[in-house]
Amino acid sequence: SLEGTPVGIMLAAGIGEYNRGVHETCNGAPIQEYMQAVSLLATGTGLPWSAVFTSWLISKSGNAKQIVPSSSHKALWTSALKVGAGFAVGPQNPVRVGDIVVIWRRNMGSALSTTAGSSAIDMSGLWVGQSGIVFAIENGVASFIGGDVLDAVQVSTIAVGDPKIVGVIRP
Image (tube, rainbow, N blue to C red; front, side):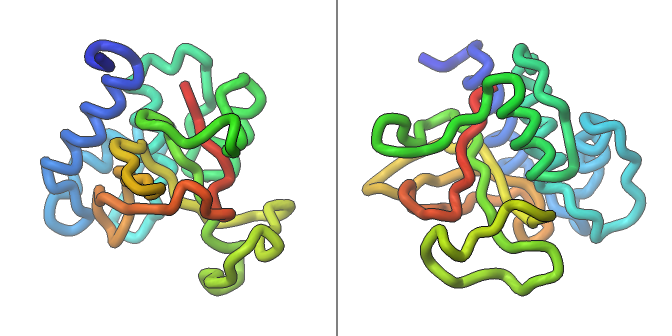
């Protein structure tokens, strides 16, 4: 059972926020709490808070590995790698329930990429991502809860073998 473990605490927090219906314009007060996890003060709507939500989830877990909270997926991923909490995904290390999946979406200044294959991914510069905590894996598809998906805490899915998965964070 994951109850009471750091992973269980993150899962419960993510599911709780999803069930709460957190949305920028309808129920945005909790977003202030997420921002405090990365020492930001949010004013208004429109400020990206996806990585902020993930940082908040990590803080809820106790953050034993001291991953530096961030409003940037790239910075969050880089910090996780530095402290031994970031892992590449592959046959010997599959995505699992409780992982925070980090997904590359596009390079800064470019449109959302729809090109399949890792050759489309260039993470050397600034890039836009998505992340969230995996709560189910079925038929090769991971379901995860992430923040700032259509301005809300939402459920999204991704194939576990999708080359846009940068890796997973295991705080």
